[in-house]
Image (cartoon, rainbow, N blue to C red; front, top):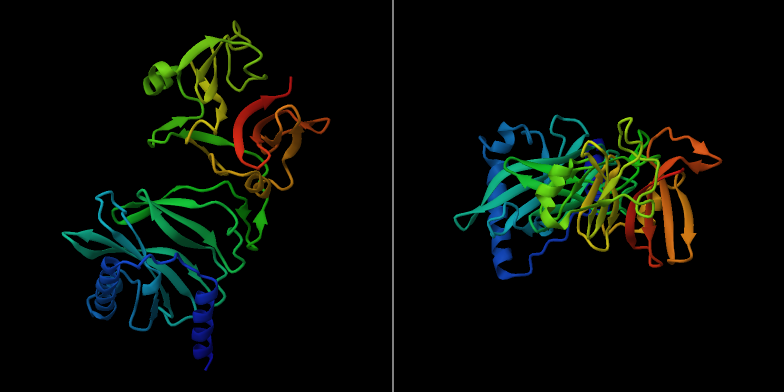
Length: 355
């Protein structure tokens, strides 16, 4: 009786909490493809030598729940053919109450869908305490999803972004978001540490690139100009020799500025997100043109400083550059400033230091 109650409870939770991506199966071809997947998956489950059993995804004791009406369709591997992700769940695999959520990956080869592998999105107890990945759509070769648990704590944050790699699904980048503590409550972020800038073509440029690397990638669009205090705020992030206490040049792009030191090392100083689809990848998640004021304040509810720029009609949010940043009379010594327009849409981000 206890096992029966657990099964019923588990199914109800799956239906109410794990609301996996809406299936786009309206066309005749997709309905035919769904039938292909149903037939393939039934064979995978029932065959004594099934790859699911060999890989210990299911066992003779386990119960499998699949959601054929929630298949996610799209081109995963860039061959312009429709592939698919089928959500399914395995319970009582080892005789216990733990359950595991998966997506079965199907790739189209020679006009037919073939099973590739199964990707685990998390282990769950009876009440789905653990965070799970919930895929929602496939677009431009990328898989968009969110992390969730019984409290659905990340549902209001932007998409996590994944990519198919043969035999695996890899995380490309995560949105700017608070961390999840051991009690499954969100822990506010304290500082912002950028790692690199991902360009629209996928090229990754370090947060402190060489001038040579910038010239090689941007060509004539990258301009080097004499340094002026109107362009860059000090103090500066980059080290300088005794002969050069401050930078004498800065780099300029149509959408960005850079510090340049006397050793031809550069540092991103300013990015205008209204002029680029570039993505700033940080330790705390990614920032791009879709970040909103609401998103940022959710990530830094206690540690950011806010003021309104009357002249330009923008809200400026300052976030510390380090975890242990000392405050000077309540003001951050150095920070990343993020500007938003009156609609709460991001405009730019820049490095700022108190002089």
